[in-house]
Length: 186
Length: 174
Image 1 (cartoon, each protein chain N blue to C red):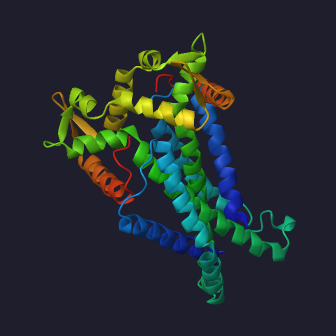
Image 2: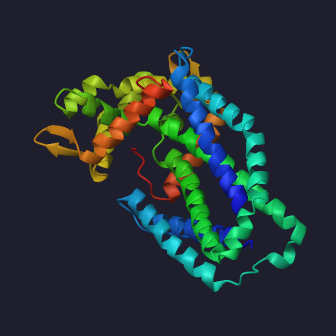
Image 3: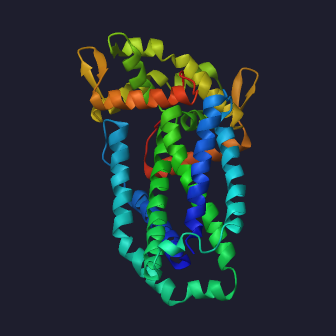
């Protein structure tokens, strides 16, 4: 079991590294007229890397199994603790998977747009009508409130300032966005 | 030992029931934090159940030679899960409003901005325009003259999300 888990982790790490290298050495990606097309392009690239590396996953699985990693764990009597740790990791995997679905339900802008259209008497809205209903100011306040609660920013006078945590996250996001060539986004 | 995946599945189902029950019956202010607390409680339950349940849990239904395929399937799940997680991470970094606001504040000369300055640098109206364009591309919304209307797919999406939001007492102005 552990040989399979190890091969999945090692191969995925190589896939992420490959994606970084491809993005880093590609001067520019095609320009897209919508965000979703840009993300579909990125998604196809990442999925292709994962599928191409699938044989490596099986190869590593065999190598680790032949090296007797599972037996080593059994011999050293750490099998139970390894299985326990993995069961916690698996639960957290399910939890994060659920969080992504929950995020679409609770926070997604596009879901809210579709709901507002459906709630309107004529079941259709112009852009100006949508902006009136989907109050932009409230949206800004909700986001800022959430960021304050998460200690990413703090209010000093009438200005919002990044906390150390916010600055670190901001720098990481800036670095990743520039590597992945995602543009301004948001 | 197949207990390693039976226990987290049981724990996740308990978590899901607890989450639905709490959110449906109580109006919760800090929802994300509550979910994290529930998950942490379930991690403790996971450890407890792991030691409580017998090691051969469910193994009477599984033949010995099937076990290696279960282990391989588990590894494949993990491999594809890391793909999903990584791709989702790219989406969050690109699309998140909070990340964009954070970037605007941290890249400003004094590393601080008023709400009006944030609005000038990052116009949410522009974000809504782009979202509408994406929804049209995805076939969820169609343009009828000057107005936008949901397609069948969009209507189904709206009703499901609307229903779940109502049931879980989630704010409607997010």
